[in-house]
Amino acid sequence: MIKRFIQLFFVVAGAALGYHYGPSLIQFLNAYVNFGLEEYPSTHPYIGAFCGAVLLFFSTSYLTDWLVDRLRRSEERLVKEVPVVDVLFGVVGLVIGLIVAFLLFFPLQSIPIIGNFLPLFVSGLLGYFGYRIGFSKRDEIVAVFSLGRLSRDKAKSKVPPGMYKILDTSVIIDGRIADICETGFLEGVLVIPEFVLEELQHIADSSDVLKRNRGRRGLDILNKIQKELNIEVLIYEDPFEDTLEVDSKLVKLAKKLQAKVVTNDFNLNKVCELQGVPVLNINDLANAVKPIVLPGEEINVHVIKDGKEHGQGVAYLDDGTMIVVEGGKEFIGSTVDVLVTSVLQTSAGRMIFAKPKMLEKAL
Image: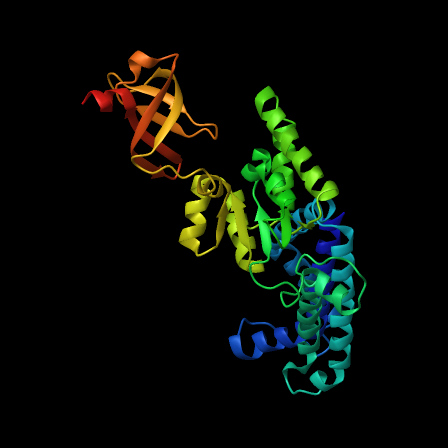
């Protein structure tokens, strides 16, 4: 149907052009090109209209197919992805743009030579810009008229830079973010992007049992943060359709809101650092609050397994810190006092090297 409508438009446009300019074109060809055509002063404009309609119909076949394809894609996007409110504001912007173009119609029409078609061009241009402005600035327009909806482009002056904390998928599934919020150490506004919610939903619907449980745990954590904890939560709706990777979307959103990204993903941490985006890494926080153990201190540990190197034993502190005991293989399954020799801090955590105290005394 839409294709027939576009073809009809080109036929009517060709007929109109042929009606007005066809006789003049025939006279021009006869007078200057010398095609041997006889001059017929009474040449009927309808002949030009017919020729123009046929010519434009066949010459715009490719353009018609291209326009139909673009219109169908736009229609699918509007139906499936774009919220009705956004479309409504876009239409309001379109109407305002056309009203402005109408007010300019008579001044533009008085311009010599180009005044016949310039108003049509300006109407299309202002209508397009009006639609785009109404579509993309919906929340700012709502804020101006005080309609009371929390804006996804909330004025940055109301929330100082850095007060937005964007949660990524990994930190939500991890779950420790809820405990941190409950203690009150994390302040500001927690931002949960819509594309992160979609990723969590996909994980929760996975056929893999482990992934499904992780996704459901993440959704439960979000529900707890939103309903049980005294902290403001903002669901950010912009899908960033021009970007495919979730990490790239997080970086773009953080730059847009001047926010910090909360994560425990090592790769995302590095990407944010390269892009100049502040990061709050839960693993770094966990390592920072672990008990400090200095070389020379004495601790009591339970050796549970072999180490990688010959003769080593491995033990763990209550917080999960691994202790490598030199010569501790013979103490596997027993509790022993050890002296700390060195502490290695890595991005993956803290590792402590020690040796049994009784061996130190023997030396």
